[in-house]
Length: 286
Image 1 (cartoon, helix red, strand yellow):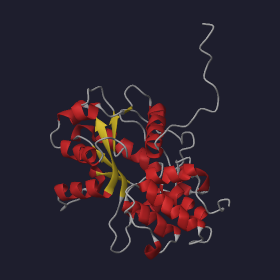
Image 2 (tube, one colour; image 1 turned 90 degrees about the vertical axis):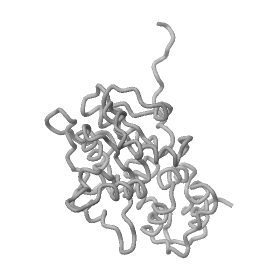
Image 3 (cartoon, helix red, strand yellow; image 1 turned 120 degrees about the vertical axis):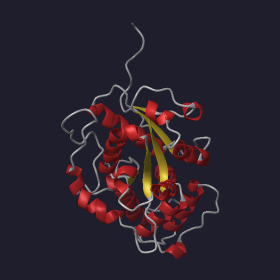
Image 4 (cartoon, one colour; image 1 turned 135 degrees about the vertical axis):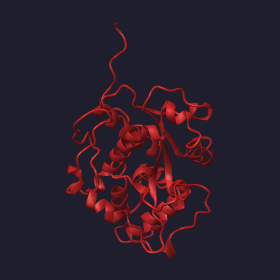
């Protein structure tokens, strides 16, 4: 007996397991798609992929009319650049016209690069970011940085924001009367992944070590890719970070840096790179 139209493909299951790899964001996605909390599977299966296979079985059984469509449409709102469901996003989104940030140290802005279109404009993003009653705000990424690299951190956060991700940046979350240590603890706990802005200042800062070490300890083998270092200045990473592939922006112009950041983040979320559609140059006859 063949699989129904509401069944998820293997590619979609893998992408969901990588992009929504923790209980809270996974359940938030299912709730947004229209699945009642009482019908959401438990997380006892031991892996996010097993959880999404259980969701797939429910969709195939008809728990939600047009369930696959509704689920992937919501996933596209959260991660619009993910190729597993990017086609389900709305092309008319106002934020697809959002301007890009200029790279630190340069003037001007860049336009949208490649297929990385933003999913909402800044006004919509503020509305969407408001958590529901009794529900803590969640972020896709917490940007960890040294004070000397705040310009780079702001640029990274803006590029990811414009691509539709929910990003926590200390510089814009800290207001008068707030307690920085409490805000930092919340950011680490409520963010799925941590982006470490690598530079000499970052490596030398004892204050930021707790941030990237918390992400490293949650995923010491790098299976879920919870810690994503982004190198913005020439530096040799410390011992633990040295074993993690980093996104290298050193020496790139603004357009190349934006494209590199978004492509590498997307690859980390789905767990693999795009396969080329054209053959590489023939290496013989040189």
